[in-house]
Image (cartoon, rainbow, N blue to C red):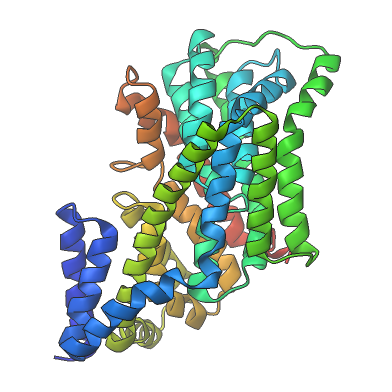
Length: 428
């Protein structure tokens, strides 16, 4: 049996493991070991199991991950999400749907120092959801806005998803972060436009907020200060070449820690922040280790190159190849975690994209946006279940109904990026 055929059989087996609710990291590692043993031998597979985890965990390139997570946790401990929401609320005071606009804007800004969609959704929903419910917002609009707004955390840099994509494909982390700025802001603007259209078509979804004066709006801008400070230090430092992404992550975590300490974080809060960071980092690194072992198997099976040759022999136009890859992402996003999906699929499809002639950094942005859809689409929809955990009284069906317009908004953004690649490449 040829290595590519073995590769396809093992990948099918891995999907069975996942369907049986085996942890994705373990499914990737087990499939990689079984496949490598089948093609090469058992002793070399054991050597991979011995050396692979150490090589992964000692890779300096992955060191920004815990720092970016710690930065977002410190921001939560400093209650920066609360201040951010109230600042945005002042800005949109008096507008119909103003709290929803404030919520999605706060999500976009908070994600700039969170790097995680789930963390953004969890932090902002605890602050904004009770306020919107108290002021008579429809459950679908309130929950849908926060579930969708949280997805901005996967795109607006610093983003863990963009970092992982850059490391997997050996692209510049700094360029990936800069490429995510305009698409991230575009997503925020399209979400705001979606809310405006919804409340215009159905005013019963939300009522106008309490009006605010221009003086109150300007004073409220001070609440954005800490976020813009951290964002400017990280992105400005990377863009100007002052420090590397790893150094930027460490500096950002330190600045967030100082802000949290100045706002009353005590030793207990510091220990909780470190504990939460360790748990999240361990989960991500477990998936990276599984993907690394799976990657050895992909190399010896040559399935990626086999698929590239197969697609090339079919004579498909480049955009047909792209459409097939994105459709695969959307389908897998309905049942898999976003980071796990990137780790699993990018090593397989990346040669196809390069062979088709697409820019790898541009594809990274398109891929992450497509993966982002999986955070708010059934049946998994990680962000939807985060909102559900905060608002147990809201039926899950209403939350999915609320996110549907934002899914359409993301599809519009995806189409714009495909039609105008400069939206992702203008800043690099």
